[in-house]
Length: 264
Image 1 (cartoon, rainbow, N blue to C red):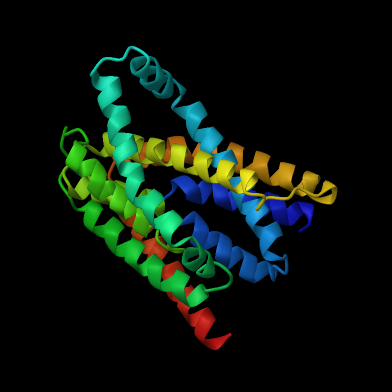
Image 2: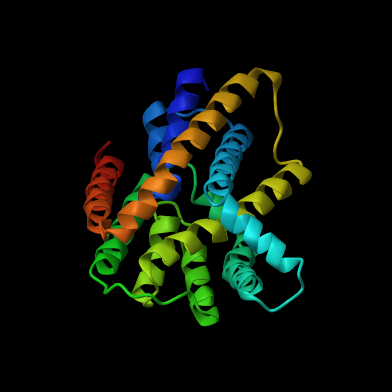
């Protein structure tokens, strides 16, 4: 993988991790366009590095909330911070179970499955359209909501289904305030990403070669910077009920991906 390709893929990851258009789907499409010939281990290493970058950008944007959550936990009281942390943990359970139980099956979906990506992008488009038409409220995420949102996050492990789109749409359809829905969606994925990175490194699945340091670093920086921009932009867009624009975009890209997979 050359330097320019790494930067482009990093920007794609940073933007699409937060915008509801499926980062995994766009990475698969981009790799197909670039004719990615990297072996699975190298591709996995680059993907993990990009996800670590977007997790870091989330921590930077929500550093105040993260500090409040952590400080609340160490008070050992059943306060708002502790309750929010418990909801985050609940939301992680479905994805952890699915991810561990069907790890090999999920990995098989990545690797040029453009037809699957296109179909799942159409599902994302439908979710966003429904959420954009939902009424806005001041409701917070409840414990039962967190479980349902967590199931959406687990389903979004399929390439083409936007994780942020699925979780934010599910939250809004459950009646949760749009801004609170976006905040919960972005924070709930951080422990999962960091856990996945730690698992892959400790399990020996990630191998850094000296020749890969420059493109990996460039991709990381590109994903981190673009992630900072996209995260703040997405919060503002969700608040103003602009999800329908992304619905149209996902539908168009989904159709193009399906046509490409069938005729090219």
